[in-house]
Image (cartoon, rainbow, N blue to C red):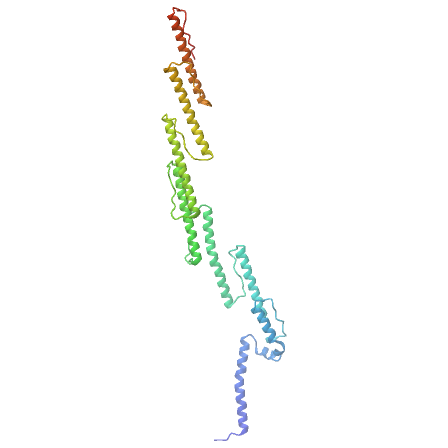
Length: 360
């Protein structure tokens, strides 16, 4: 085996150092090229890098961006790696600021102005930024859909189309609070539909068909809807009672019973109707009593000259009283004339004659 001289050892060490350094240099070059920096730029800026790029200044800008201050802007360096770093950081800050502006615009357009078709638009977004924005826009769409569907139902209800219900899409299922609102809204529409049907039925039965005693039945209602249903039923009950009471009194009058009065606790026009109706019965009762009294006095008791007296009588009732009194007066005159002639004949006076005034 040949001996290795000191000269050969130095040569081997030199070759080994070159062999070790070469991969590191190539690796660094590849790393810089992957960041968009060519070997030429790296060589051109390696001497300027320590002079141009200030690590403390860079950290200050990065902290500002981390804290949400996107108005910061790094100064423009002469070129090379320092320039690319400053431009990249400034672009990140500018994109974040633009994105925040888009968020604010969407919040105002959708949340305040109700422009539900608006979405967040940011063409520069790539990678995870684009994925995040797509997810956010999808979230807005998922929130907007139930609102639009509820709006359709509420608009239909406002127009009186109560069979309209909130339906789920095949690709959309309501969960959580939306599911609760979905069920509550549909239950409300069903209750309104049932309530409307029952009230219409009672109104038709009582008001149009004359089927008194009808009541609305709406199962499971509460609060205002129950109060409203109860009010409708009370109204129907009151109308039924009033009409039946009037019917009974009218039947009594038709049968000649003028002593029965209408007894309805009411206000306004109903109270006026009750007073007028009872006043009519009272007038009829007085007329009947007076006519009967005159007929008894003149026709049976022989007490001529009797007259019927009905204070406040007017119209046909006044004419009726006047005719009865005229009849009684004529009968009195005729009977008394006959009596005078008869007395004269009894005394032998045959010259007297009965004079009766005929009414044409």
